[in-house]
Image (tube, rainbow, N blue to C red; front, side, top):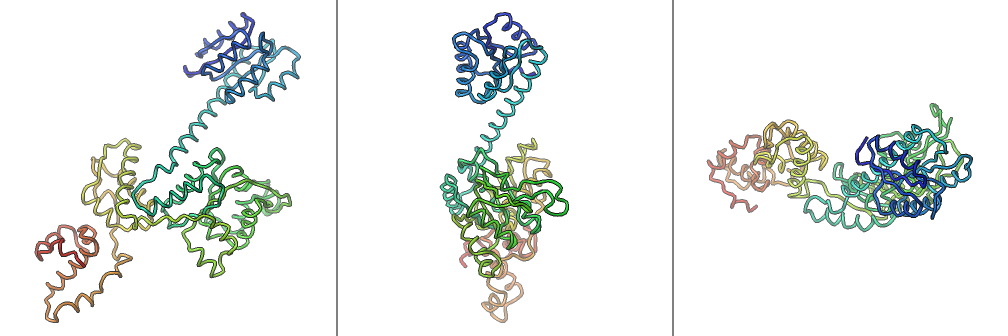
Length: 465
């Protein structure tokens, strides 16, 4: 048993105090004693106890009075009442006031120990739950913003303001940009933080199953519905429901969802009972919902209900230097978790990370860094640990001047050497003289590119296009 557990015994009978004290001291607990109600209340108020064992009949203050006062001051302290034989009514009153349980005199010491251990286990679970929620509140805090991108910081400012309300929030952005993290942050920084956070991936289920998942079903509502099932909205009562990929839900489910947003009411599939819930809705999508509305794929009234407050998160490729801030963050986290002495990235690895466009955004970067930490045996992450395949063709390569336009700027009698020089300069300028990124586009290694730069006497000052 844990040496940190402490028990307060409040009983006016010296023999009973000594007996109970000996029982728990021998079991490894710290025991404090009080001989009347007033002394017991003062001890419970000023001390730090995991359990109180309280006799019902006490001088100065009776057990029920002590119990009521203790529960006002320390509602999570479990209290076991000791009652006289035949005092059933009094015992019920004690339970109503918040006592964990009661034992009737004369009682078996083994019975008291079993009840006490159950009460202590319940106290441990309460403490663990409180600690977990405080950790979640700390982890999902608006002060944990990573990066310097102005658009992201503005998004978090808006989210911080809306967190204090019950307004519906629509999060927009590509897959992997951190929409779920922001949804959890809004929840754990709101007045609903002690309630559940329930996530539903709307794209993962077909229409008939999604309706049952969201709203529940009654026994016999459809084949294999052998019992009643509560839906996610019921489970999220007094908390937050996060509807990810909201743009993928079918029209029939959209109709029912609209009613929940408007009236906070629905019926389970196959049922007639109207269920009323108190749920905050946060939705997310990587689709253009306005376009979906124009194309009659998404209800306009539902879109307006969801879009009370919208927050857009930009893709990682538009966040500039944030990519390395995230990479360093993930490196430290995974190195600590795996107990590896990895401290930094090599210059080549940094170039590869900056050159990649990260179509999977933060999630893809996180996975890449975790994989690199697993593979790395030294103290520095190198390109081979990242295992990032270079792009054969970049999405925004079309923004470059075409080969024909580059050639048109050269004389007709230009040599292949001159054409090669012009193209290398063009790609270097395009990638801001990031040599690793330019080498990937050119299909050569970095050493070869360095030799070409030296051969053609190219310098960074030429990057004026």
